[in-house]
Length: 492
Ligand SMILES: Cc1cc2nc3c(=O)[nH]c(=O)nc-3n(C[C@H](O)[C@H](O)[C@H](O)COP(=O)(O)OP(=O)(O)OC[C@H]3O[C@@H](n4cnc5c(N)ncnc54)[C@H](O)[C@@H]3O)c2cc1C
Image (cartoon, rainbow, N blue to C red; front, side, top):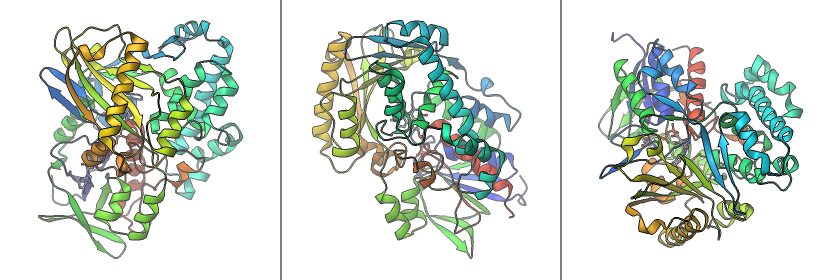
């Protein structure tokens, strides 16, 4: 590369950082990504032990098109780097009353499956149509543009959303809407659960978020043939081929500024000059550790955070009849969310998520064994005694699996690793171990998220799960896309 190319520096190699780096590279920047830890991926990580491989973070993959788009920037195709399969069953749900539902990707099969659920086929069909409507009337505005720029409101995306405002369900909650639609049916709990996809509370989050269900039920659930970490590997291969530079084991400690511009990025060892800087680290800690701004840091610290997770990675010597994604619901969902957001303690019954990647990726467990990722939603870390909480939650989980699936798990566990909210905080640098940054529990949450640009410095931008539009792989990729659009209009 010629030295005359403008230089961009990305802080953090999470999925949002890698995506932003690729987008800047496609614009002709010379790009360096500086990452504190020894490897890329941030919250998307993997664990290997004695023939077992576990995805430690994300397990659900929707909207692979957004990953493919990054390859398209270089006239390449994701398919040539990573196989992705469409899952016939997006999730298998088990309810406290003994019923179970297979959520088939195929809509007709899914509707057939709901025959015993005490709801009419038409009600479910029109609900899913409504979710599609919500998505198509909000995505461009809320997900793929900066809602912090007045121009977005007068542009086509803003106008489309504003015109449909009265139909966007912003002023009722997910739970209320789902109860009104499905009455006493188990489908209320099934669809309420989508609030957890961005760590929020269905009893408080706006019903607009019911559109999350659209992504699985109308567009499909996918899984990479190399596991979720395969997404990071594929993007890193592309980044290396295209000349993006990575520096690992190096924390950014500050920025060099001149007037309204950032001119460089500081680490313990050196200063890198930069004409554009994109931050991918947790926005709250950014204002403490990288660009100290006490009042902004304090303000961000006070806002409610999304939930965290407690995960047991179990190497299991058994062959179970389970699917890739399985949910064992609690009998009191409301109490569970009160525990997550109010008392900040586990409830007495927990919804348990079991994800088994070797149902798709044979190599993820030894012959005759399975790699169980067993997760419960957990409150953010606010100093709880995690040893105690883990002990209690583990007992509840083991008993619940025995009760609902008739599997005596203790007999089959030959490897165990535990990830607590405290460890998530330490490993991934997200405040209090919240997975998705600030919570999305109010109609204004989307607008309160930090913008993708700085009002103080014209060449400083933000990507990743703690800024607009939020957490989760698709939204982090969307944030990088927004940054790309903002840089388009930048005069260097
Ligand atoms: C247990 C769990 C389950 C999840 N499940 C799903 C799921 O099923 N589906 C889904 O879509 N999403 C899921 N998510 C959320 C998803 O993983 C995240 O939203 C996404 O990966 C966050 O990416 P990011 O771009 O914000 O960067 P992060 O992953 O937060 O990475 C930020 C990077 O910045 C680095 N960094 C921090 N400080 C510095 C510094 N000073 N200098 C340099 N580098 C620094 C960190 O080391 C880290 O690598 C899950 C997350 C977790 C933890």
